[in-house]
Image (cartoon, rainbow, N blue to C red; front, side):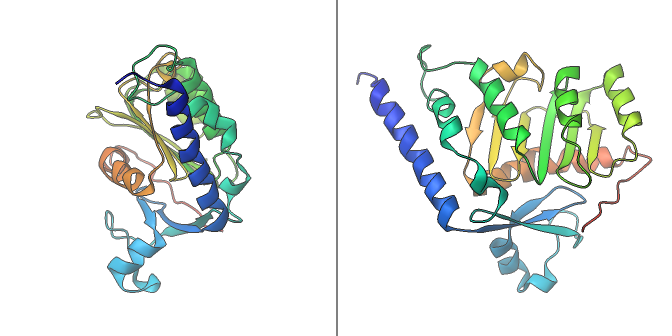
Length: 244
């Protein structure tokens, strides 16, 4: 069967039209564990616990959750998904045609999404370079978004950055030695998964763009939270997240 670029673009556009419509008419309440970084929908955690008052993190057993809403009046309603649709239409990893893949668009898309992050950014990767560390440092606000990163290869710039930002309660770079897959999650509703490092060059490689919430929850639980929990053991100073 011949590849039809026009039909492929129509399918991708339809997908993002459906996502945009869902965000406009529905609410997604996310429960975010500020200690270990686990998150899931309020509905799922309530079902497990029996009531909202009894909710505890299934990973660390703490009840230090931050609650936020996606959709309707949430942060992502203000994002015009069609701004990035033109990138996503060319990024489907099932297509192998060069005119469909534009690697530089991964960098533009990831930076675009990170720039509008409001609640949290999770990074799990082998290596973070100075370029991307600076991007993350620029996201530091008063309390949010929280930036949690785990990586394998240390470099002098990251050490200096961690020392300079030691008192920041929403920015944490941590070392962990067993990471095999790179993962970036923003606000729980979009994720980027790939084999490349989180570096300037790595971000121009091919990344899988994931928007299915349940899949993102699963990826976070498998590819981020275990490494982050292990990395916390190496810290002398454990962050105490503040909830307004």
